[in-house]
Length: 409
Image 1 (cartoon, rainbow, N blue to C red):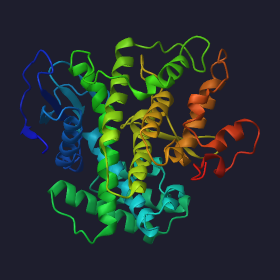
Image 2 (image 1 turned 90 degrees about the vertical axis):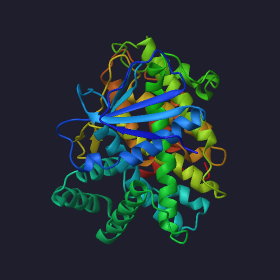
Image 3 (image 1 turned 90 degrees about the horizontal axis):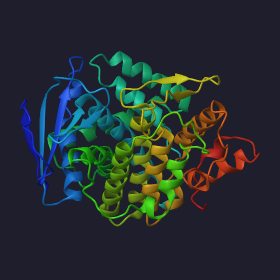
Image 4 (image 1 turned 135 degrees about the vertical axis):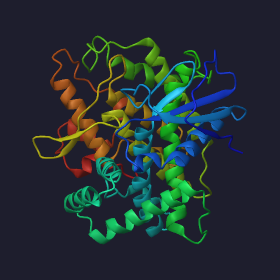
């Protein structure tokens, strides 16, 4: 049973250690919309599920109030609580629902066959970000404008997008109100399963990082991570050091590095415990969706922005955090963690399609602007990208196929 307490507008008293209680404090700013504040039940359910997976005996407490001091980032933590912006987590909730809704249509239309995993969704991670952001305003005009842009750019019919939007609303309706889903509604059951799992993967990494700080800079999970035991962690970290691929001017903060590593341990633990039923394709689909979901907070931040490049493609304005691994490295490690914990089809749990394009663009831009770059993209990074990317880097023409994760790879 999930242990979950909600106390509104309460101050949090200091504690000296973890002491068997996870404390999540949501705060909202003065510019928060009414829509930003209606996902507390959804946030609480996902957070509580993650905390319970890490420590079933621990109590989860969530408290909400207006921000006294608004954090610059989505979250921060000290030994009193994990503090997060409610608007940022609400944005994550909405992105997860957009991504899950379309994947439900793909899954059901192919009767859950492995072929599902080779289908590139029409809605990209940036589309989901923009649609989710537009849906936080009471005026439907902004959402309609973004929807029109999406249908024009993706070759998606208005009827198809309306169907996805209807399912997106149904996900919120059931999760926010704790209502049971009709077992015969295949689309909604699949959508909610993918939504819950992908969101819990995202929460596992984000909260796991902050839980390290909350627990007096100690990770609650003592065992070695799979990315460390496989040597991937040290290679990715080395890309930011002398002789590596990326600019060394952003010096790594040891504490934040350890906090990130703790987040990957949490992600690994939740991924290994998640089972969405007998159909293994559904489990794989949720892990793929989680990579697309985490692209937003890691590459651009949940209150970030997108911009057009010289080819008029919408690309992330990468948000670099002082002392942290570069965003592309953090997302590659998310992919590695989920890929290595995927028992059935690890070859498709990668940075695929539009996320692959963003990663390639970010890596190329980083190397171009760093004269001392080694120019060498290690195998550990290539393993998280479609096979076509390496072929294109080696001289093959770039095309949409370069970024597709093939089922038979």
